[in-house]
View 1 (cartoon, rainbow, N blue to C red):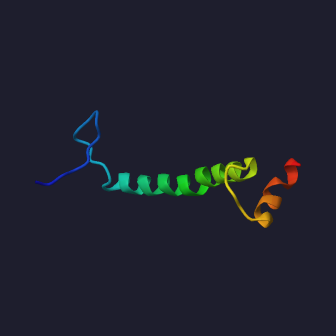
View 2 (view 1 turned 30 degrees about the vertical axis):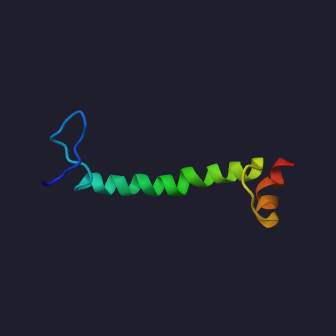
Amino acid sequence: MDEKYVFYFDGSVQCFTGRHLIMTAIAVAVLLLAVIPPIYVILIVKGYMKAGPAITDGLAQGLK
């Protein structure tokens, strides 16, 4: 059986093929470059994650 991913509301739209694959790659790139790094910065500055003093001093310099 050939399994395909399709759009929930319209089963004729196949996911991860053609232009949809390009948009998926762009969405993943934006997630990795623009969403996740600020979350790490916030977690390090707030003290929820440990990082070396060189990193934390640079991140928190304007906050002290």
